[in-house]
Length: 365
Image 1 (cartoon, rainbow, N blue to C red):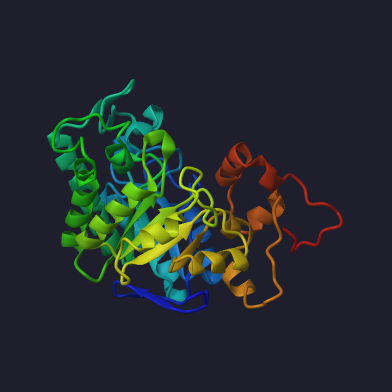
Image 2 (spheres, one colour):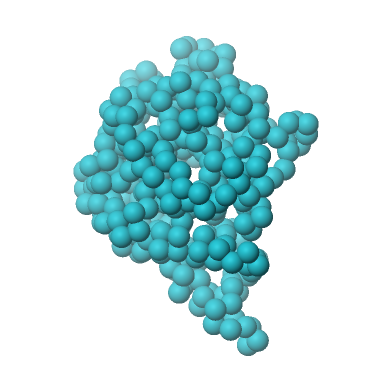
């Protein structure tokens, strides 16, 4: 299946196509964890542009797990009402809204979290999670998922990639425990599996439950083979989809050049479990190649920032998304607020123009 426009179902939800908004840090919400109207507008604009599924940026499940300024949260009942406004904003397009749940673990920012960090094992500014901490963190994910469900959104995604807390437990270099949460792969994966099982039991069968994994992370000792094994386990535990984060979704691994991670992991999970892939996908041709490798859905990040109507534009077979840089004026018109602009300038300065060239039209990017 390489038809990007084909609908797809997951859980009790149905998406109009196989193009998702990838979860992205955007720093647009409030310091107390309340989702802002600015961030809601940013997400709703992509739904209006035809994205079949909206996956939010990482929303914190616990205050000590917060990572960046302007990060939304789901650790308080006060956060339900803003999430409900997001559900209302997405309703006209019937676009499923999925909230990514995140705990920074050792990647926390002390000035923002205002608490001591917690990780699988102790480090310079964080301590090792006790059994009681693990129980609390599992309950924090369960409670967060129930808040998302109460708000009227369609699902959650547990962020277990990019070195966040579940990935710290999975990592053989960051998890040096010798108890039931560390050691062999089955023990290192136990924390993530417990999260999945607990959330699935709490929200029921129709609410979408997904997990994001890094296909590999050499610095943390995570290999495609271990990721494939974990993918098979969490599929048994009840996930509706696996979101595979790759540096480049169309490239093979530098360490494993003969095996594309997509094909390896697709083979490890049942056909009814959806496979979402993200990683430098820019054009419709890129996205179709990812589907041909075994993905069911493509998640677009930078392409969605600069082209919020990407799914609608691709109906023209001659259309190719213009690459950045994009003017700040144009980005602002596309729903990128000042905090998000600053974040883009700091991390991807080559994608932002301070002024549009005179020979470009107002619609140029």
